[in-house]
Image (cartoon, rainbow, N blue to C red):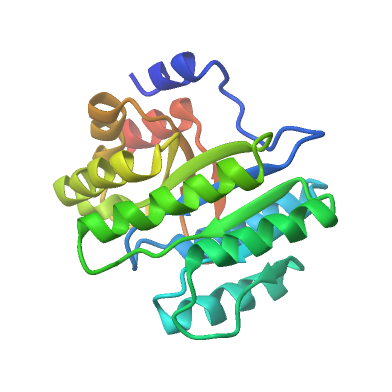
Length: 224
């Protein structure tokens, strides 16, 4: 069950494609571990020899840009941000794509807002960012990952449905799997939304994010 979406996606391995600009849109509600996940992904990318940039496009939450800058400096990755308040996230993404092209970056990680006034605003914002990427970097390999708190259960599933409509999701990152929840949400997401799980976060440390292995996950689930 867990591997079925991978068959549909055509590849079980998940990494930036070489000789292309890869843009990974990172979405999810505030508190799910989105910004932390971006920092960890940047760290993995750097360690794996990819030239990586971060776009601080969550401009609605004052602390988000600062938080992503802290993670950027920890992993030695440059963060493209707009110093003004309430800047247009799509403008930040536009600038970041320009920077990524001029620096010949392999991977651009885009932090997006997790909470807007309502569902329509959220969708409009994500759709606008998507349009900017398609227009400004038509040859880019775009992935759209939803960061989801594994302890949320049914709530998490509803979140995934909303974001799936807005951001053309291509995968999920499950965080907070170090808690007592056994990640049953993983099976629900795979079954109901047909989305592959790409990474799991099992702690706060910079190394605590790893590629998802269905075999290891099921072993832990049954032996826990």
